[in-house]
Image 1 (cartoon, rainbow, N blue to C red):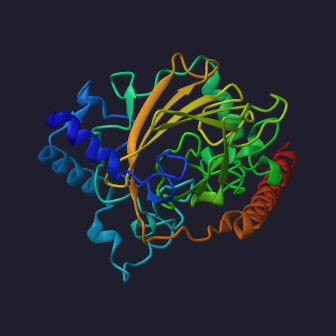
Image 2: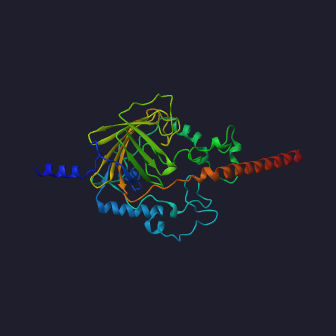
Image 3: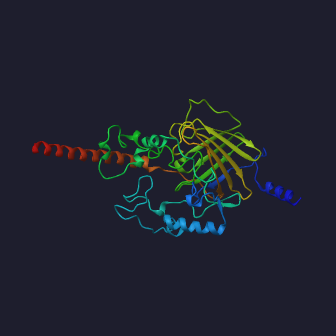
Length: 350
């Protein structure tokens, strides 16, 4: 009887829509120090006691220099000129972001009453399955501008074929502000801009993502559109399984927000409103042409009822793209001038 009474009390505290469904509407923060994949030394240790989690929080902060003391100081200086910038999206080594601009949260979050050591819980080692042969190379072609090693010279001219900075279309989609460099479907925490806003009706759920101002429009009790209609975020439909909103998404573009995934990606998400206002977010990724097996993760979205999602302005696309392309043309001119000088010297020696 006590168990029944307790369960009824918790359910009564969950806000509901006029139709009786749990009301997921609100603003949430998905920032967390819980890593997507579990550190290998932890093996199958999927959760920790709170005191152990606090120690790991401290260790992560020291290792990454992202402690609350560092990131909350408004007088924190810029990185040294010419180096020691945080290596984020190719920004390192030229005075890139420092820790002041990073907002990954200040602690590992709990999910279902335990402090998890990784967001991924299936496979049991907390790590994504291996990718199929050839997948890594395929994605490298798409993200050349991100993975290119900057030596200050046009080294891409040493290789035949297209270069990473030939034009706007050759730059990585995230660099063009088309998609986030953190996954939107499924939602995986990012370095910053982790706020979400949910607006719910009986027929739709809208999730506004702070990162790259993506707005997911999810249709409830609907059917997927034709496979020929593919988008960055895929086509999302939902249904209620008791008090859990289940969202199925497919029909992605070949390149989408989940690193490594392709057009065969299928994501299942489960949203559960907790009595404390937080959302338990559980997802499963299935892409049979990328990973050897499907994988799943879960973590809690922290309720922020008095917060707002502000405008996201991606200045990489507004300003940096032109400078990237101008810089590449300059380096190519210098490379060609050096090549002509070397050729002339070689001819003179003959």
